[in-house]
Image (cartoon, rainbow over all chains, first blue to last red; front, side, top):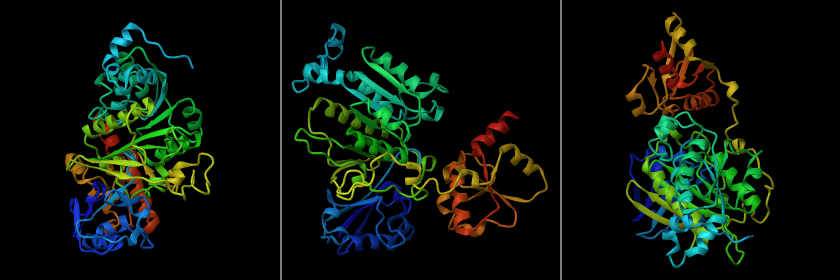
Length: 92
Length: 381
């Protein structure tokens, strides 16, 4: 199973769960599965067009999926996907 | 440039640097010659400024527009209780000059803006970004890219920290990525929790700001491998650290293939913060609210703060945290005045904007200054 690491700003939508395991075959499916398991997270990871929001970066291991096969990047067991949000500090 | 020289006192002070073979007097000279602008004297600025001053960075610009508040002291260890109410830059200058009298502290008691940023940044070699909001993050980044300055970046949220070195040109002239390569656009307001909802573990900016200071010193002295093209991530909650790659993006509007940004823009607007003019929202002062409470006029009071804040103290409003407002909208009445409040007025403003825009409410009033102002007035009475 691949593991998706959830950043703290999004953990309030995952009952504070820090990671999520999935058998999804690619990145898009994995994020979709995450938002299926935690519906509240959906609008925070997908925009109105169903695209992964562009203030989130998705990494496979230490590599940006944008230089791999983007959302279609395939996943193997033991892969670690990280969702990395823009954070600005104290004020919004 | 004349070579920097050191007094006997300085040599003694910096002796632990001088005996590091890779660092030695050359590194110390570079530090003394360097001019670093630290934007923000908050949680990140506190360790950053103290370590840069202690290390002997010759000129340090300190930029902030705020005054020291008691709620800063949980993490902003640059300040002491006696500093409450003082402009941060002045309190910082006093502290840093006490720490190291051999350096020059320049204060900028202003809010960094598109109007003043280029003029301020141009006088420095390097910028360390320790700000606390998205518009200023993009502003600092863009000013650095337009002026060709390295931007040593750090950011925190609750238990998470990020560090990177942006817009760094290495000795072969190869330019590294900048903030817009990593995050092309900011999250829309309301989608990311704000300060009082978010909170931050006091020691986290101490850790992350120290890493940032380390990168500043490395960039200045040329010692080691700076965090260029890489983003360091720290999760203090689970003690996990990761370093991921950051690539230049050919679509970067500042310095990609077809740049479209050639001057600073309106960063409030860029971050979607000007959609609703503050004046469009109806407000109610604490005095007016107290009168409303005494009157016969029916109204609904809603508190949009987080659970823990509500538990600490509340004024008996219906409790709907900002993030739940959309979901709980059917609890909000439309046939009488509704007063919405949070801690100081920011989140309640967002709640009203959302309710007016998405659901067409027209009976909502923002309690000016929030529950903080309410308790101030009630305590004074």
